[in-house]
Amino acid sequence: MLICIPEVLDKGEVAEFRGLMDAAQWEDGRGTAGAQSALVKHNEQLPGDGDLARALGARIISRLTANPLFISAAVPLNIFPPLFNRYGAGAGFGLHVDNSIRGDRLTGLRIRTDLSATLFLSEPDDYDGGELTIEDAFGAQEVKLPAGHMVLYPASSLHLVAPVTRGARVSSFFWIQSMIHDASARAMIFDLDQAIQGVTARLGIDADETVRLSHVYHNLIRAYAEV
Image (cartoon, rainbow, N blue to C red; front, top):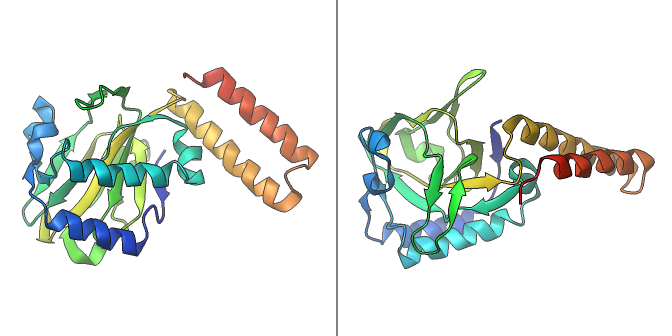
């Protein structure tokens, strides 16, 4: 399941983020890659333990935990502290899969990576190339979203970032451990939640149909949730 979440950050927030990031010191992105991924990863990152990355990451998490579409799609248990990367001309990240377990040195947080997230911080016309390509059951999906928008996709997917040929692609990336480990169950629960929201808008929150669908939704959560 690939979900695009619009306007996690507004344009003013993106500009503020970029001003702070552009003035910061960056490091080789291979420092956070596994042995296999490091062979095909060519980019820069903000130091993940640094004050700037932690402060900006906390703001992203604050926005997401108040975002109904994100909550519906991810059913999050834990969100890894967001990291930030930059791909200049010639940089890219070849085909790889994200590590199944991620640990954060500062907080001791250790999560299973059920979902990967990329929050775009460059406008599409600011750079050429740099498409995020995700392989799923329906083939390869290319993603290049406006600044402030985010894509959420299975961390189990093979994916790549195409080489940038002009400009710079800047983004935040991180992982989520969902309460619903089973991806097919998570997709079904998401579809049901979206249907409930549609029924609620048409019939009202106290309509019999809304109550009965909500009953099914919460019992599915009970059946599949790990907390």
